[in-house]
Image 1 (cartoon, rainbow, N blue to C red):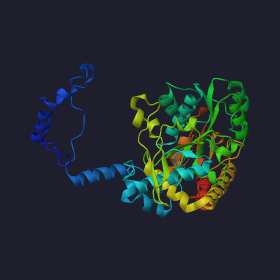
Image 2: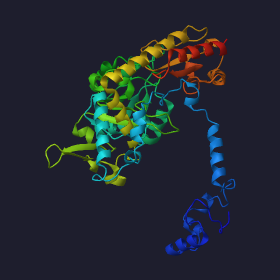
Image 3: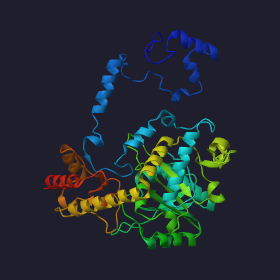
Image 4: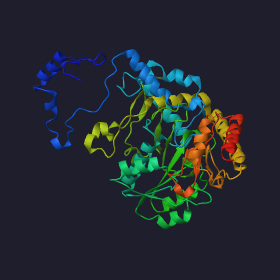
Length: 463
């Protein structure tokens, strides 16, 4: 690439335009802009990049070829989950989130985005109803981000660093918790009962102490297990002065109790299941919720939209709440960082929840329970296959063990994909103690014939 090259798509790449910009800032060349970087850290040679594709037609063909190498979940029968799930998406969700005033829903001025702010307030209100809490943040990047920030909140509220988290926490969340919260938290994994997949209460009682800030439990867990002793876990945490932080898959709350009902202090979770498509590293929608108490509200790192009556009776306004606690105001002195938020997916989740209502959400949850338990029963009847691995209630996801078949999950999944089926998420590297096990996800999108097709395919590839 020469200094005389003019890119057809990128503005101001011509030599005259570049020289004018350099003259405006008083430097002779672009290289001078990097003088502050030590020579030992600089590459000192051009990057080894292919020649640019300058034809729009050729570029489109190249990108289409790259995309064609992928098989989306819509191009196969998928039983993948583990944090991003395939659910039914009502057409109205895409219709509304595709409107221009929402599609650019990143942030903005209070007086210019009244409709956007009202939509976000509705998201917060409906999530609050689901979890039984009064305060809900605007959506954050994902469940992992919400979890780390919530446990940092708990540490600041209690003045303690030790944090006890469920042993079934996914490696993704565990990595985020240690990388982002490491300077402020000392997280420890609790033991999991090998028969039930539930938290080992004896281990919890042995390790809880006056220096523990919070106990974190997921309902359902990463393994799909529903912890049914939450009230007791909450008492153990509270007796030691620790907070109970609960993680939820929002769509499960149509059939499972609200976390506030069994003593949760802070709730985090994922709302991707509420009308949001599975996307490439996107489409996730985490949230934080708590009681409307000053000690909690003061520690929220994320934005919140509030409502206030207008001068004219019957009119209402929407805008930021307690903005002074965020990094937008505190900047480098902030205890946590308010980064990119997922407003568009929060608005989508609000559309989904308002469309289904409480009864509709319950029907979805019941349908998921029926389908997933049918799948477990059918898979468990296959020679060498155990489903589920844990003797406990499950919602949507469950672990299938293939040790008795003599095949690895990787080999089974490869053969399944040859038949147009995405098998379960391979857990053999993430949780080696589970042997050759995979996490399977069954939702309302799966029919009985879909499940029967999976069972028949597994029977064939493991024979």
